[in-house]
Length: 129
Image (tube, rainbow, N blue to C red; front, side):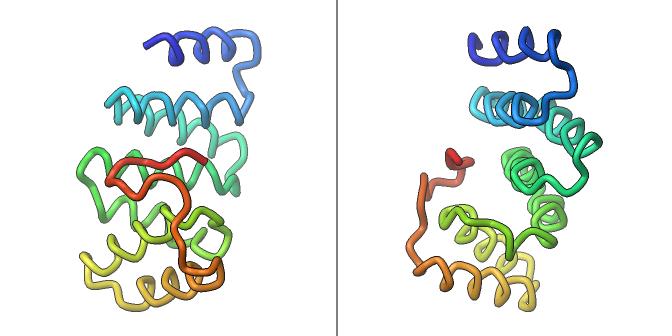
């Protein structure tokens, strides 16, 4: 799609621009290109290994690809750093579905600290950040 093309052009000028890589990953998810999204988020994490939006995006890409266990692994270390209620709610749902009570409880507590109200899109797709 056009957004992806524009972001790819921007990356030709600045190939290590993490915000652009994250935006490209988000655009790929929106276009249903989950493998490409995973690649964009992984590249961002190679540059900035502790980047929370990239880690969250990687989890959403895994979830969109039907890989909830991979999403859970991507999200586990950033539960406390996540500020999007819809993402935290989805974390709760994923951990519950996988039977990971410890991470589910952790995500519920993080959601409660936000006031419990999901922000963004509560759908099964990735919300905007």
